[in-house]
Length: 191
Image (cartoon, rainbow, N blue to C red; front, top):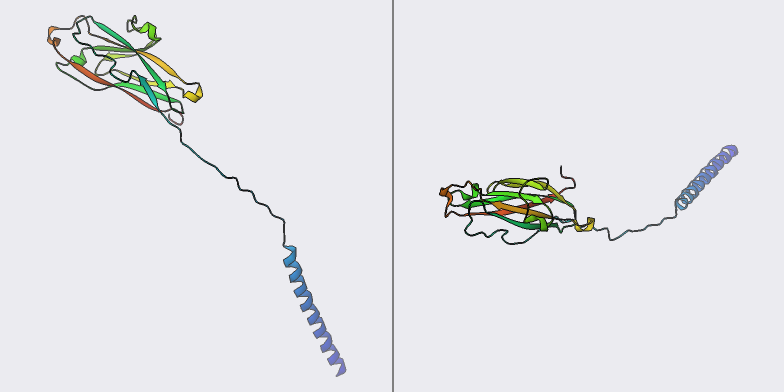
């Protein structure tokens, strides 16, 4: 029996040794999982949207014309500026024209781009012409202005209103009025 007992003791010793080695291996494994670490936070990541802002000078009526007669011409320079933070494109239109006797459909309006000093002598034709039509329907589209931070852009436009020389007597003592609307929108990401 002694050999069996010895064998049993040996088996127990081997089992106990295996258990001790297993526990030691687990302990060693746990301590070997330690690694160096570091972290850095980058703060103050902020965002701000830009602006699309158009400025027109003068800010009140471009024209105030009493007693207009056939053949009369009135011109006025208008400064348009981009005072926003991004490039824009703008359109001009006659908005909500009204009047009596359809005078708003008789007055001719031309819009050109030129130095203010040239506005009073411009004949309403030629290379600076951006748009010409009757007062009620005039429009100019797609004019581009850079932002102030991009070199700042302004443009001087000449608005030229005239009553054709062949205007009939039916237009006597009539009135016309309109609002000139300047619509601006961003150019970036805008087809």
